Amino acid sequence: MKTIKYLFPPLLLLAVLSCRKDVNIKPKGNYESQLFIEGILYPGEQPRIYLSLSQPFFNKEVTPQEMFARGAEVRLSDGAREELLHPDSTYDKFRCRWVPYYLGQTPAEYGKTYELRVAFLGKTYTATTTISQAKVDIEEVEYTSEFFDVYGGHDGVILRFRDAPGQNNFYRFQMDRFLDTSRHHAHILEVIQNDCTNGEKFWITDLGRTIFRDENNDGQPMEMYAEVSFEYRRGDTAYIYLQSLDETSAAFYEDIDNQLQSILNPFVEPVFLKSTIEGTLGVFGSVVRSDTVLFVYPQDNP
Image (tube, rainbow, N blue to C red; front, side, top):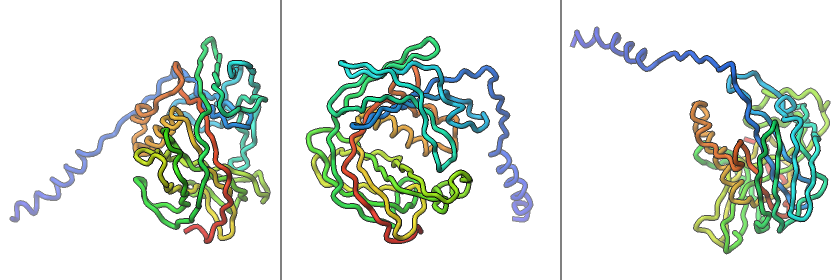
């Protein structure tokens, strides 16, 4: 027994050290950026297509302006009319920075099929989407101070609605509301320093990261538990939508959500992301939104 007593600490130290290994990573100096395309059409709204250039994983932090793919030719066609989109931008008052994109003037229409064509640096990329999803309205919204999913515990809202029968449906949560700098993002809190609003309120859109399918629930009542991204106080108001996505877009955003499970291992993340645009990374699709529901928070965030 005495021998074991003296041997155990060295063996334990050896076991601990054997589980640790330092890896020296040398980023490639000849990294070639890849074009990333993101375009979601909403009926009744002008189309916005976001084009950006991928960055090395170990690169310094960059802004959307620095990543913007300038000089691209972006065209959108519905079969009867073709439009050339032009560069534009919106100021993000939460992060105090400009967000550039390519903007069209003709609002998207329900029931039409659209082809996106992007020409950039001698290459052309195409994708199509049809806006045919059913519009599904919300029947009830309820606050919940705690619910659990694979990522742990959250606070948020419960959306109740009836699934549109006879088709595969893919749903996502959307919340629009006014904020000021006293309401932080729930996941990054004070990491982002806002010094551009001077106390004024600004409009934000909070999109749910999780895609909900109607599998085995065709035409049945459904409940959606949605985590909210921003802090709140009792009496704060928000406007809630239920989004219906096309199947291609839903699969893309599901892949992005699944990457959270491997967030501590960045070397495996690219494996899960499947592009919906041949030849490059990205997604082109459409969303049909429900009528909006006014929601008032009954308490402060936990």
